[in-house]
Length: 302
Image (cartoon, rainbow, N blue to C red; front, side, top):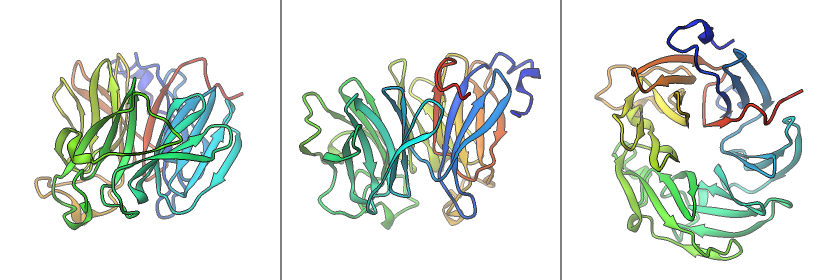
């Protein structure tokens, strides 16, 4: 149950359906959850580590940090799964009906994969080394512009993990051939800088939005940053609300000194931007990765 939001006069208008992906962590196996606010229902659809998600041809493509690509049908049944080497998959987006782009954090690359065979075709590379120096994590394709969130566009983020070197970059994929190898230098493409381990970059109504994760914030370009009490990751936006994920902090020694407290609860904030109020929906998971807003007529599980 979603904490009876339908009986809350400030939130009873929320009727959104969400898919929420959760990576595994400690004893938590992770999984995929459906949150239906109209029906006041929470359901676990899949057990296993899940990170990014995207819809292609009425199928759900899921990237797992266990180095798997998973394809599900509209009943959330796994119809295809493929294991890869240690690429540390994070996000995944649809390029077209034939190709998905998958973040390969371990290699500073975004791989291009055939949607029918899950075969790797080409790549977008951000560093010559096959070692995580940028920690690229999430991507969003807006027309021909690809937005990428990362811990540092300069490299070697791990040398100063508590420094606000994070950024959002944008690259132009006009005429991009997914079977080719494309190279970019991230520091030359920065559109937002001085972030602290950002995630969940997206565009909504021509405005850039993202989670400034270790600053415990969600940001929409034209608005006041939304301050929360824990590590933010996962973002969904509708006309009525923002849905912001919160995860258990994995590295408590990195908690910024300006905060006197950091909550370790995993779940979703339902935030009303008009009145600047929120409710928290706990999830039976330690980590939240992605939040996908889905329509009322798709992915109806029988």
